[in-house]
Length: 491
RNA sequence: GCCAAGGUGGCAGAGUUCGGUCAGACGCGACGGCCUGCAGAGCCGUUCUACGCCGGUUCAAAUCCGGCCCUUGGCUCCA
Image (cartoon, rainbow, N blue to C red):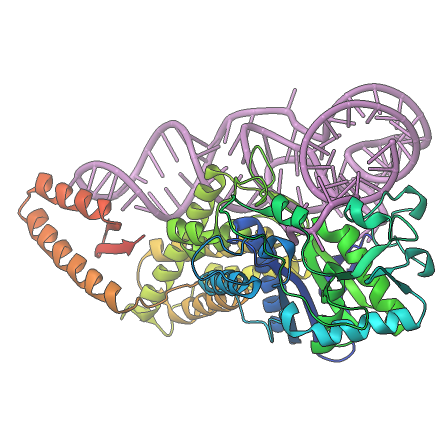
């Protein structure tokens, strides 16, 4: 039985849904800039939840939006050639984000809806809210009346009277209550907003972003309403899981609940899961601070498995600190796991693996690892403890290999399967993945050099052999001399 | 100011729901040994009296209660 921490109640609750289907909505990214490791942490933990629920037999319907209508996006129009419209800028960064997601080995969502293609649904939702008396028009904008919705503030434990005004100062005069929030904003993006978000002044007329026709005139959808409209369109009026960054609890998710439940009279989401923020030693990772480390850079430098292992070093609900040391630890953990996996595969496939050999310690270790992994994941997705269970299995495999031949074929086979099911399928790590075309040539060449080096070693020319090893290492090819010959690894 | 999440070893990070079996989980690092031409990997072992502070309840507190300190996030359409 899986349990998760529900922000709605603040408690860890057992996860129960009707039937096998899980409706999962993830508050995605505003495509106004390159994605950094903080954004990816949310995608990653949504991916792990998706994978684990699938592992436990659920049919996960995962929807994750891209916000492609936003002041920050509009503000960048004209910054580069080809960025003629808000849609151009959004398309550019959407493409990059998708590339990042592929690089991170994330399971695909069922759909990645964009705000720009859901304006009719948004307008319908806003109209419903106006008709039901939860929203009102003012100067061509439409605002949600927070006093009309009973229970506003329940998610974030905010008391209405304590709330300060939401939104920009210039819209406050249009609102009945300072805490009311915009569902629809009249006209295009204001010059002030463009100035605020513009990366640098590049001359030319200030962009206003796209606008759409509405019953209240030309305008743009508010931020909060998009998630309600898109999740209802692609999933249902009631979601099983709504996931997002902890920084969105208030006001974004609070507002989503208010407008959704006001419109449908049904519970909006049963489980609210909030992912903690990624921090550096000094600051929160935020594009506004400019100290971010992009996903693309991290993948280049460390590779997907080390990045994923880094994320697997801390539970989703807490914050995580990014540092060079943390990445080094991730690298150590990943390499230990990968080596043990390869060692298990090699031993399993060797002629010395026998049908009647039996190592009870190894077999028991496989059972233990599976049990501990499952228990840790079921317990609020405790990925680090689960990973440690795999590392313990790595130790058992290594001990078995150290004991020498004959190898316990069945035991090793079960160990390999455990690594693949848990590390591969559930964690999304690429264990034993075959390299592609160019890498094949590189590996053939490396093999050649390794053969030459072996000849030098046979001849006792260790200085020459060491030199070859050093030079291979400098190229990202590690050579390790094992009892049965050299083993080659690529960084 | 208000709301929320946190504070556990050299680092990282569980355990707190339901007090005892909990403190060196597991991992990384460090140190020593085995193995190796060397290195690496692997194995074995060692090190280190870590529960933010102060009180309270109790036979017993990392865990419950009260107060305080600190960090982070939100209240600025930032995951």
